[in-house]
Image (cartoon, rainbow, N blue to C red):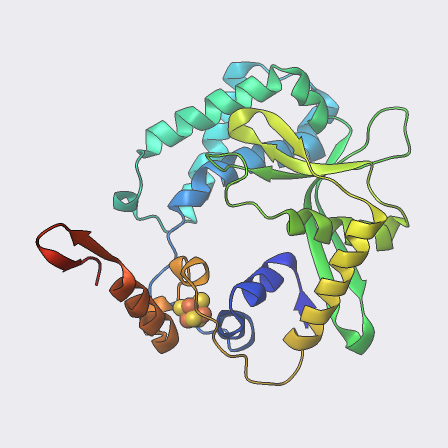
Length: 274
Ligand code: SF4
């Protein structure tokens, strides 16, 4: 089995979801909505091309050229996406303007340095016992000037810092780098595009050892030929694309809704939710 961070993330959320998606490869009952990913994908693609191609020719790019390049990237992404615009708060044009403003702000600030001397979309494979492969696709690997060290960065389009991010993702990449380069990164963190901010996380041998133990244990269970049962929870089921056809998830949702009662003085108990 080829195991990347997102497969592991699915397994930790709910083993049944992991099995449906990655072992049985069941199609989603309702198509995925790419709306929430539009902003992040567009900015990320710009910096991928900047790191791997454009910076060698012109490290500084004028704002009107940035806009032009983003326009092409955005159109390409829209063509290959399924978007339910009614589920979002912003129009196609509003998202694009935000992308342009934030990209120009990064490119016009000292943080542009994080994308200089940097490689993007680096794939690392590590073969483990049993022939399974752990794979990581790192957004950015930055090499500070005059140094042998490297910094791992994962780009995030999140609208709130710390929201929808998982430190384990960075530790997963750090572990792969350790096996590939035989050393830990100097630093690792999330780069929040909307905030033009690099937010590092803590790393040490103890943290990595604890992380490696957790990951090994889960990989052992993920690769066993057993029935992976459901572990429904509000967090796991909320964004699960299989919810509409999952009896365990639907039952748990109904039970949670039944518990959501509000008491109004004098009127007794009022059912709230389902
Ligand atoms: S709906 Fe919930 S219980 Fe069902 S597969 Fe998805 S995460 Fe698991």
